Image (tube, rainbow, N blue to C red):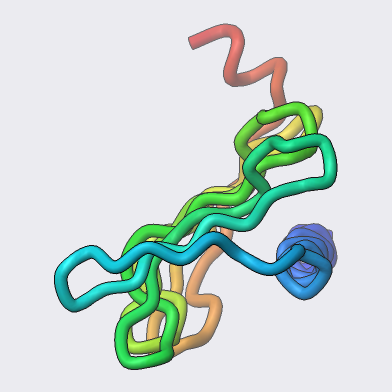
Length: 114
């Protein structure tokens, strides 16, 4: 079940990236900061490119401005810990060698008790 949920989250974040309008691009040293927007003006995704590849921290939001995912890219590949938020769960996905190494999920009820 966890794998299905993570696959769904990854597919949605990829779909959101593909549906984004033309980004606003800003040069920041040797990186290019890209900001994608929804039609309502809210930020959809924000992160950096280096040599045409995704690099560093990327954050995605829903149309209301709530954080949906956050993680890092190195040379265009997902690395380290990524976090995916949904209405009732938080999922932590660890990437190693561009593959999902482990998945942990918490329900909103468990998060509220801590």
